Length: 353
Image (cartoon, rainbow, N blue to C red):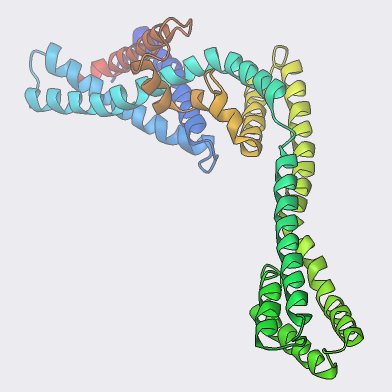
């Protein structure tokens, strides 16, 4: 009958404690990295536990191949154990544990810094005055060109010695109408020209009074399109103005959210919720004002949630001379995992004797 000694029971309990600590940290790191929450934490934890048990067994294979006097397939066990350790521990468990421990160290300060930056720098007023001036200039130029074309048409129709509506006048009328191309379709341009040509046939344009009536009718026909031209030219400004008004509302809401989050971040007991809220606020702010993100020089809160980016920044020297303590968290992760592996081996040791 197996001898369930105190050491064996103690080792099993200790393994569960250290393994649980490590697995929880790994699952939390993965949950933060994935961000979208499509994989629930309990499912991540279940997978992590399975991998950790596998890693522990790989450790046992290595230990057995080294210390047992008689061990079948010693070399194969050692090689398989080392490969398993490399993939499941060095490339998975230890980096994610380190990331989660470091996240808890730096995320709060990162959130406070970024929320304060957004609160003080979010741009709630777009420079729509420039857009307005551009639109007005565009309208004035088109209107001026149109007026000049109509003056040229009138000069042609009232030409001394040869008044009337001939081929030259028809072309000049077409030039005047074509200036309104922004609001008048090709089909409507043709209609306008045809209507005015028909009008010209109803008047004796060799008579001054008739010519005046003709131009009054022209003005009446073209007036709605002139008014529509102004609307079209100014449309970009109206859209920008409306967008800016909504943008200002959204920006003020973000500022209020920043203030509320900053007010409780140092006193809240549920840090996970406040950091999640901070990430939401920051994402909304950068969506509203992308230039904010481009100009921020601190360490972004979003980057602290990603295990790959944190390690990439570590190797890239981003954390140099900063009191983030990544080296300490690496050491802590190694100690926790090694302790779990050692207790796992001790808990099963008698089975091999």
